[in-house]
Length: 116
Image (cartoon, rainbow, N blue to C red; front, side):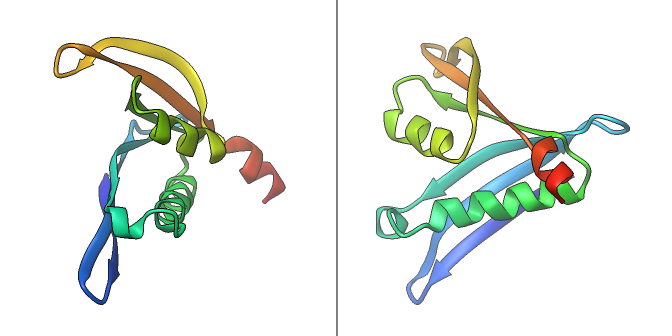
């Protein structure tokens, strides 16, 4: 199952997120495939709102965790994800353009489900 979230202003699309639910059964995992926010939508909470909506969708479909990758040299993205509660769990060598490593980040949705 995949979905796309879009944020617009009066001039058009300012951000989008593509998510995918991997797996069936007892342990499906949510995956953020990509999120992109134009400069005019940054520092306004647009990306955070899209991520919150994606997390809510994944939780509703039974996902216990959300995973994503970010380029190791994308400091702004890494700070953004970590502020949202994502933890670094590994590195994938040469993931981007067959030369830039990716940091793997994961967020557990289980604790939010228990507080319910």
